[in-house]
Image (cartoon, rainbow, N blue to C red; front, side, top):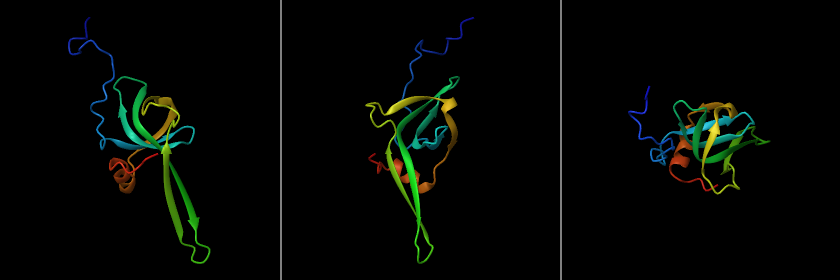
Length: 115
């Protein structure tokens, strides 16, 4: 049986559909890394594609006088020593995938994160 009738014969992954502002997700890895990235599932594969991943670090501090809690968010490149910025990641290493809050999405999609 030939099921290649609708394929071009290539099994290469094409990244053209990963637009800078498309499919931004917050990914929690099983090792605890929280990563903001463009995320794409590959049909029938046990891997996903993440592009331009940034580790999200949040720190909360409470003012001793008022008790008001302030949270600061910082970012740095995931796999910072790699020259690649697009990665194939095995699904078994991912715990949760979710949509980020609007302010995180806006800063990422707007290109405000410099790693």
